[in-house]
Length: 268
Image: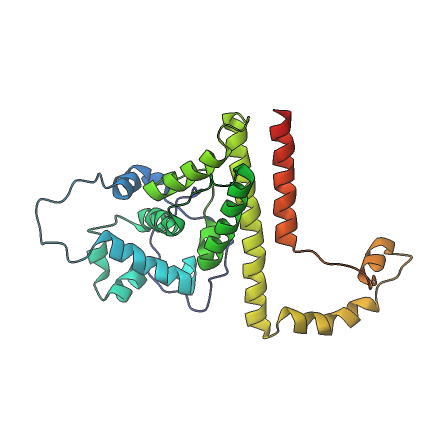
């Protein structure tokens, strides 16, 4: 995953309410990539003066992830993380220069949750299918991840390991390097879309207090009375088809994507 915008300025005030389903903006530290890379890869020189550190970077990142999971990325601030750790806000800056670098560290940390990730067993198709399902699960665990992009930012060791694993799944099957990356991005984007839809549906259910079944039980008769077969022939036929067999949209979509990749591989 990558980041697209510099949000390095810290928002010290807390955001009330549940914003865990808010996926409207990207996050990252594009202006602080060098600092993030030092932290991610452990190459930042250790301080030779001052008090002995009372925290670890892993503790700070874990606390930040808990805050973001509970309150959404808009509810995350250095102050909120400090409160969760029971320390003063300024003490965090000894470890993390700003929220931009913290975002990069959080992203790499949650990417590591599914590692090691063997995607070569069973062939490229099985590997990409597993990658797609793992991606959706990751976004559902951490909805704020949907505000990360694939285009910029600091790549950490966990991200590099995950990308290496999925590239290994499609290596040697006849695709060139550009096609390999495009296939990975295609599956990733699809997983993002599916996860975003599920997160929004869950948020709507929490907000309205109705399950999907309850909603449609009330809504279906309202829509049915407005469907005119002459005006909406295809929609009306589908809506009133008593023999219709619904398919799992995620499975169908992923299989269709992989069918397309298979044709590309066969052509190569």
